[in-house]
Length: 138
Image (cartoon, rainbow, N blue to C red):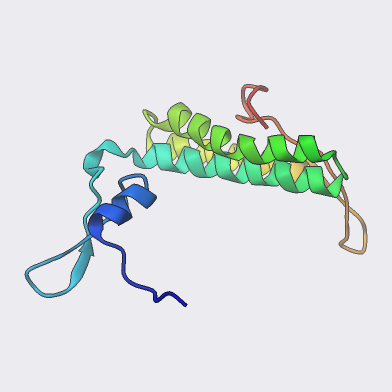
């Protein structure tokens, strides 16, 4: 049986895409020190999260609708593509506009579901992402 160990900073950067390293500070505590620094856009991360929500919703909708294995596999692959699209769409927006983009995605998801009187889910339709353009990978 192998033993577990802490990852090195270099390993953290590799597995996190360069944004997960931790470096000890002089006070003895650890504080996040991502190597990607200011290159990451907060509004872009909000858009990536919207893409994640849309992509994962579409995966769930495909399962709910008993889609074929190839359709479900494609939906899983599209999660990452939707995250990238969300990031690039919102990276240069203000945070307020990115939050509106996220809310639009959430509204699309809510509008694609049908609920019964007893609170049970009756239908899930897949959504387009981004919602406002009517296109996307979802």
